[in-house]
Image 1: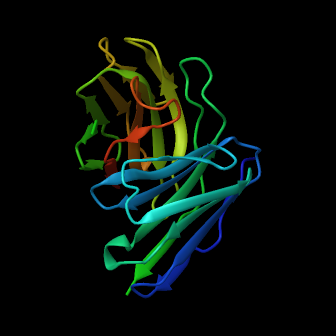
Image 2: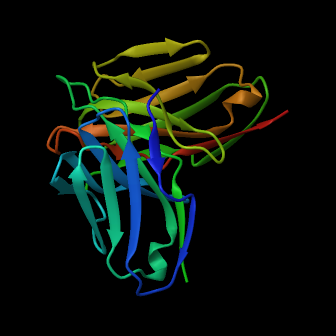
Image 3: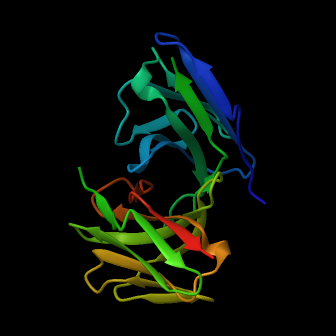
Length: 116
Length: 113
């Protein structure tokens, strides 16, 4: 069974802090994704990576950066946390697209981040 | 940017009633996936539709992809308490990166026993 593990279930930080959210997957997936989930807005893609050291911006990358030094690990970094970044953060991973089919994304349990 | 609209945002049904959620895009989708998120849980993949007019069934769940590949629906027949959760569609646009999916806003289903 695919396992996507996020380092913290709950996290409380202060405005201006640098925040690291970690995600590890054990299925040798090439793709990894970071989303934030807010009520009424669904899942919005922040960044994704399709290979080690490769990254692409999603729909809402402002205020975030990512790091993928190893295939199994994808980190989300809030450079200087702000209150509007209080949210649920979900990590996901998948194999690459084959033909016209995207592969299912497997999600972690999420990190509920509060910025005070 | 391109969006996938999903309606309704909430749906409350009596147990045993049917339920439908709809996704609509202004531009053609390459494919569409559906996910279910139980309360307190994470999204779990249900199915993917690729072909124009495609219909797939999983027990009481029926998934459809429109002829123009701009809309999709999920229909649940005779809902049960185990169907509670939020249902998301996620589509890939042709002119976006190969791996990027755009999620709908979700429909939260609650069941009145």
